[in-house]
Length: 456
View 1 (cartoon, helix red, strand yellow):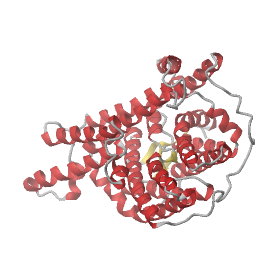
View 2 (cartoon, one colour):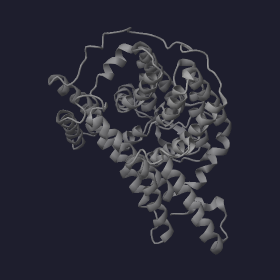
View 3 (tube, helix red, strand yellow):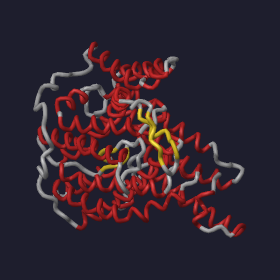
View 4 (cartoon, helix red, strand yellow):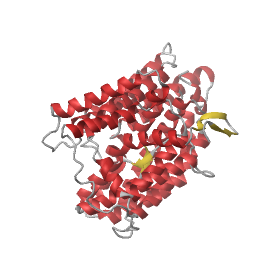
């Protein structure tokens, strides 16, 4: 199967359809899992703690998140008719819904109301997909460049938190030891990235995480004592926390989150298309969004939450140049295995956060660089393009610089704009349409649908 290529009838042979063989798929796939592991387990940790669950029950939430994230990734990468973009996209529990789900839990709704809201909002999102996918017409380079750049910038604070230790309440938060461990990991990434051997360069992140963890273990910065505590194998319980309860207010709140997630997933699909160098049209976006919504609707059955594309893995595709969807499908299989084997999950969870942070600096910076490369295609001789880029990135930076900026606004505003990605995306789309309607229409008679050519 090595180097076998599958012909896509629409785009011809494309890098995402290359099968690298079992050994490379596993090695590169493991890199994807390690890159996003901290991100996928954080939401169940936060929500489980807010719901007053025991450590064992929080462990069940984490196992469910891994299991469902793996299934969703398999659906997105391998796909079947009308479901799955067939691109190297990793799926997992979305951070976008954490604040809303916490609000539902803290107002007495509990996890059953959260699950009911996720199911209902996901089904509505599935029905909206044919209409939502058409927004590809509003994503010329001046917009996609802003969004991709903002994805990288928005992820940078995540890397910084990891470098500082991941837990602000810990005694060693921001300690020189944590920062030093991250710096060593970063140096290892850079060292392997300078190798002449192409395979070693592509596996730089994996080697850095493994070697960084070994160094941390030698100096006593990591603890593997809890690895053997708990079951070796367990299947996620169905509706363990109760049958879903459908509350209208909670559903409306979660529906806003769903629209934000659909916007961000669309941006991620376009970003990965730019990096892979393959065609991403409204049909492919629609297939990707349907996979997103279907996996989100099924997720609560196993005890997990809303699913979305993981932007940090977009950076891994960019930095390694490994564009095969079968690599990411293998990562999905590993996630499923981790969900079924808590022992392995506990071992991976023992990887120090500063190690992931050191690797994350390069990963997330690579996404930003990819966005800048896209923005370099924009014609800045047209003043409007400069204004669109400047304003969109500045507004996208607001929640990154100050997370409390929208604290006094209504909940739906905070949900919509709490992410720098969604803020920049919405701003760029609206400004692109506004400038083209007000300027180009008068000169050329261009209609709204032709804004897809603006910014070239």
